[in-house]
Every structure is written in structure tokens, then in C-alpha cells.
Image (cartoon, rainbow, N blue to C red; front, side, top):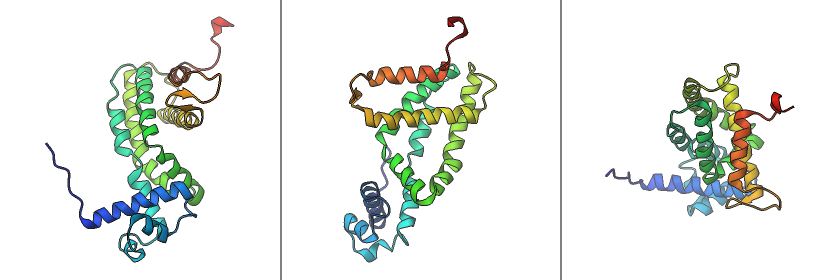
Length: 210
């Protein structure tokens, strides 16, 4: 059995600072959070926080770099079985949307980054880490066959990620524990199946049905 590495006191303090900052950023916003508040939440003296981070922006940059679940996304994509392309995308959708729900804070950090920094921090991470991971998966999907050849891998993935993120965000508003919060909506699982079906096969009426 692999032993977990025990954190040093300095590492524990650093983790406490990041935990406190993320909680406060998500609750009060970036501009509504001060270094003193972060220090108080972390249970350390204000001066102690500067032993680890020069300022609030540096804390936020580290949060984006370390707390966006890259390893979880990589693992979820690697576990998708090599079947046909459409089936692989459907399985990836199921795996990833479940993980995004568990790590919903990810969207809060992205929103703050867009509002305060024009998306610069997320852009560096997405461009340097996430897009390469998704492109590896896209190549696997393409090799498996069953997809239109005239759609590039990048467009395919942008559609896929946009659908998935939109599904998760709208699901937070309209569902709780997979049960609809608004009368007349289908169950969450039914909606999810329909959504991926439309993604894979299109929204336009088939020629033979006109």
C-alpha cells in the first residue's frame, strides 16, 4: 500500500490559505475578499500569509492552476472504452458531467477569472493542459470511426465541451438530486440521454420524414 506523503507545517499552512481563499472568493467575490479575511479564515496571522504568497492575485493564480481538476478529467477520458466514436463521446459525456458536478467550484473560479482578469489564468491552463488532453481523446474518437470527416477535431471538442458545461450549469438551476425543480421538466437522466442523442445525430428533421 502506498503511503500518503505527510505535509510539512509550511505545506499545511499553504493549503489552509488556499482553502480559505477559495471559500471566500466563491462566497464574497474576488474584490469582496481581503488578505486579512483570508488570513483570519485560515487561522494565521496576516503577516504569515505573505510568507507564502506576495498578494491576493498570486493566491488566485495558484488556485486556478492547482484546483481545476485536470487529473480527474484526464482519468475520466482515459477510462472511456475504445468502441465507436459516437459511443465514446456519449460515455465521456456521462463521466465528465458527473465529475463537473462534484467539482462545481471550478465554474466559480472561471467566472471570477473572466470578470477580474479577462480569462488570462484559465486560458493558460486550458491552452497548455486541457486542450492537449482533449485532443488526445479526440484522436482516439476519430480513429474509432463513425463520425463525419468534414468536422475538425477542434470543432467537435468545442461543441462537446460547450454542451457539457451548458448542461451542468442549467442543471444546477433546474434540478436537485436529479429531480426537476420546475414543473413539466423531464427527469434529469431522461434529459441527459436526449441531449447527447441530439448532439450525436442533429436537430434537423430527417429528409425522409418531411
